Length: 130
Length: 479
Image (cartoon, rainbow over all chains, first blue to last red; front, side):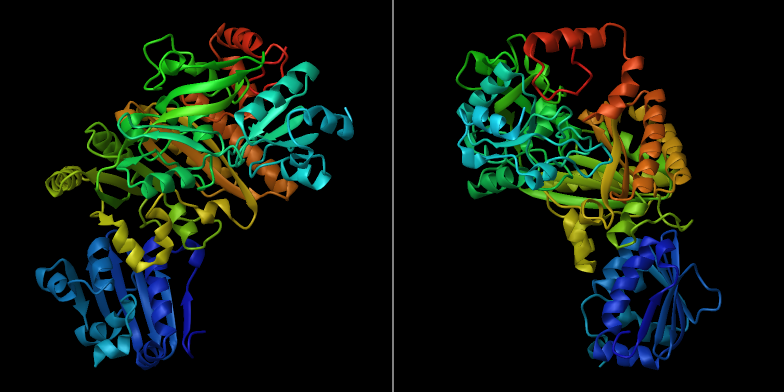
């Protein structure tokens, strides 16, 4: 339980390193009041593929679940090398990575823009949205 | 011999306050983290100087009391567990750095000097020198790692740590004190050469040929610029191909491959048995150092070019990322950032037990041995934690199969014993040889050893330790 948001990694013992890394960042963000507020507004899922690994993050109004593999029904997708995605998570050169194609995205870009701040390290996601 | 009599005897060499026969104290020295059987000493002798150690040896030789030397006790082979009772010689207080010679790149140290201590001392003196640092805890003894021919983070360039020894001062089982290497003639222990090399009589002999009081060890230059990269590879074969290619370039300080369960354990998964089919097989780290930005750039470009070439041939490899990125992402990675380090997810695991079959062997057979080892570990229900590192420019490598277990659960101990036994037979079949060899492994090795080799070892042992007091029970050398 994180400030009213439930965060869970499905089958944690079998989760890939990408999922464990991303899970730690997500959990930290949704444990902060503004991140939790954002998570409670979201409904839908995002697929993340980094290198050969893939995970799906599902948001269901206050419940955030991270699962192995790419769910074909996701609202938005983001893919790139693990390094490129880690850099985005650290807030380094995100726009450039998207513009140069280092990181690709698909689906609903507005939903992705809402979710991305929750995937960033050490930031207050809501503040970044303002 | 009863406790009071032992105390009286050793009191001739050591103040009574540093002798203990207290059962609780003795129990603390009777086991290590491994599955090796416990063995209680009859007395613990806390030594503070070479002179005291000579006195202890005199008493032991005269009364035929076994001596088991110990510093941190972090080895995973029961090597500091008394096999025949007697005196446990605790050397942690013999921890003086006697000299550091910057020009000749040498340190002269006592047995109790730890990696943390030596690294801190070099830093305090602002010397651009370093020692090869293992992945064992910071309180591990530098001397013991050298004498047991372990490895460090510069073994790719300079070989196993036994090779770093420039000279030794040793109390033999006869009571004589000798010096090896150039130190036998020169006041500067600059090298093992050019006199007949006697240092080998004390390397990997596990204390059975003498008690080392001082060691001259080589230090190596520490370039000011450093990068630690992580490269994820999706197949074992690619990992080993990459290691072999990078190792022989002699451009890098260290290359190590950690198998997939390691990353999960870092994130708190205690027993990761199932691998996500899409996740990388190995996390390969690469240490690069340089004296100038241009040199660093060249080395990094070389890595990238190698990765490109392997990818063009179909290998699945991620772009490298540096340790700073990982640490920024999660503080968990800080334990991989600077050495010495404590890999708490292994050392401090909930069950408390930690063991390995750790071997040196031909890199040409890494792929096969790793395949077979993973099958064995899976069959026994252990996550396939493998560490692979090329050494000495890729002439050979280290291949380790590491298991955590519940130390106080007899069934789990038995399971890990069976697993290690099978792993040992497999690696021996593949031409690998365990280092820091536990007694149980020696029993399986001896029947395979070249005829005459063990007999010569016994003759040497009989010459250097005629009373059989020096860490008996090692290499089955006792008459």
